[in-house]
Length: 392
Image 1: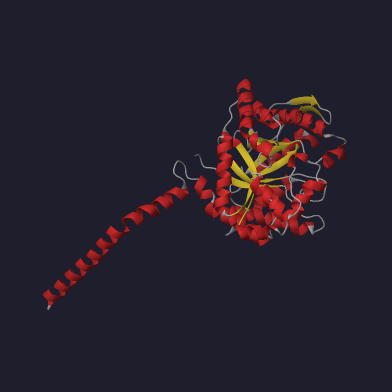
Image 2: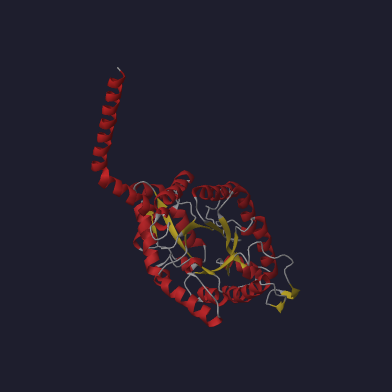
């Protein structure tokens, strides 16, 4: 197994009505925490309505987070490019690429909340059609082309970038996918990464995982592009604690608010989560196979299940949520870093296998080696006694 990267997909989700300033600070602190723990990536969302996903500009958030972190890569997860002039999307990302010295990534999508696009006079069909057009323009600009083109929302006349990216030849780019083949088709067409957001959050999406990558490879072959499973990222749900009972108790803090957002507020049927109370919600996450609430063993089993179903991917992104309070949430991330990540990193022999194998070997030799140690002590003691006697 190649080294599986781990990270977060941070919408973020905060209960409406609470202090947004403090909520945003918690998001920044979480990214700092993940950087210290050795997580690889953090993808930041863009939303403009519904009062829960409160980051309007992932680029601004990334600029702030980059100054607080050292290693973690920071992506827009996603920039709703259907809402923007594609020239400015490309310009802002090139700027971020320089400011972060190559730690920025561009995630593209049509926008998930209809209440966002309605304010621009666009419906969900419009945003998906614009996504394809605008992504093509962005890719051409990043290749150094001069673009003259009129779209439904913008007109470009001899548009070109006056800066080249810091990353060579370009920073990483990925397109979002929920359940339909639209995202995989565009990923293959342009030879870019795939962000499977909904594929692990519903049974239909889970069943479609392997098909998604087949679409990517088929389109890539048709357009002469090269794609790699290392650029495929799956988004999933987890909260872990030292015991299953503790994890269940901790998520009582906020899991119902999170579920109610998708059930009653967000017009996003692809996230059709089920459950009437907290117990049913926990059972839905675990029994439908869309996530893991429990122990590190449960989390490891879920990652392995996704790996087997998909045929392999490059990064496991855990959806940021506040099911538990901030302290328990941070502890969950710590436990995953300590006890889940080592089982999927290190190459043919994982970090966990290496240390467990060394421990097993030492245990098998302990009795013989302990006897040899005791014999060595006796030998050196005898020599010393002889030496002392000779000096007398």
